[in-house]
Structures are given as C-alpha cells and as structure tokens.
Length: 222
Image (cartoon, rainbow, N blue to C red; front, top):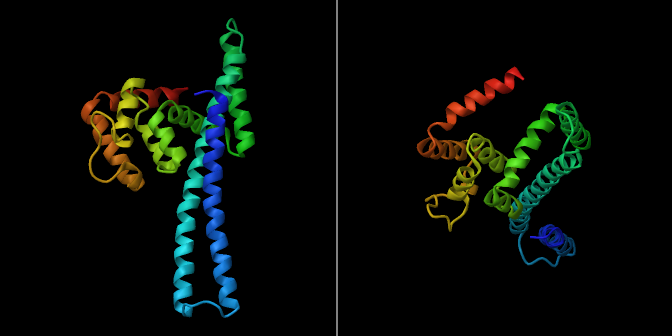
C-alpha cells in the first residue's frame, strides 16, 4: 500500500470514528433540549436511562478512537526511527549509529513527554506491533486496545518474524490456518489474553522462554 493510500485510509478511519462520536453528542443535546422544552415523551427515569446508554455508547466509540490514535503513534514512532537509521551513512561507525539511535529515542521522548526509558520501550513495542499486520490492523480498527497489542508484541519478542506473524494471526485473523476458538482475543481482559498467548507460544515454541530470559539478562548487563 502506498503512503498516500495509507494516509487516506488512516484519515478516513479517524473521520468515521469522530463522526460517530459527534452524532452521539448531538443526540444527547437534542434529548436534553426536548426535555427542557417539555417535549420529551419519556419519563424522567426513561430520559436518564437514555443518557446512561449514550454515555456507554460514547465510551465504546472513544475506546476505538483511542486505539486508532495509539496505532498512528506507534506507526509514526517506528517510521521516525527507521528514517533516522536510513539517513545514517552506510559507512558510519558503530558510535555514530548508536548516537543516531539514541537521538531518535530522545526526540520521541521529548515529543511524547515521557522518559527516555519509556520512549525506548514504546519504540520497541511499536516497531513489533507494526511488523505484525494482524495486530496493527486490529489496533487501528479499534478491535484491539493498545494494551492488547503490546501484550502480543511482548510475547512474540523472542520468536522469528514468521513465527510471530503466525502467533498473532492465530488469535486475530479468523481466516488463519489455525484460528483460535471461543472468545475473540480482542474481547479478553489483558491478564487472560496474556495467559492464552503465552500458553500457545510455549506449546509451539517451548524454547522461546529461555531465549527471552537470555535476552533480558543481556539487556540488564547493557
């Protein structure tokens, strides 16, 4: 997908969600205006019930918007880092490459107003989320929260790319060769989602937990 097409798709998704949210706010305004004028057919309790349901509906749409925003932040962070690397000369020294990477992380931290450590973790998770099409797609559609996307990114960290894609597709792609059954992953609370993803990963990639421990120990030494 070209950059222009992808940008248009992203903006259309945001506009659609915002339109749905605006419609719910307008519905509330119309109901309150009718109530104030004495033109509402419902009782006070019925009106309050409708206002309550409107709040729940808005929460749902706002969660979708939050997920879409998280997807865009993840994509822009990952691509900013990749562009920084692409601008680094091929013959640059290890020191210069490291400096460029650190500079990118620091600038992302400044823009998002978070610590350098948090920016580094967010960037790592963002790059992995963006490398898994079903994760990014479900995040941007609002079907999956950022927390859910981050869990899958974390649990696939020690896997090679094909295995990570297969794991994500198992839980998020209904057309995958071996899709998960039962409650959709996007509907699971974070702790349950992590448990199911981890159980599946260790069943099919039992060596991955050892690799994760080794990597974690190496990162702590760094």
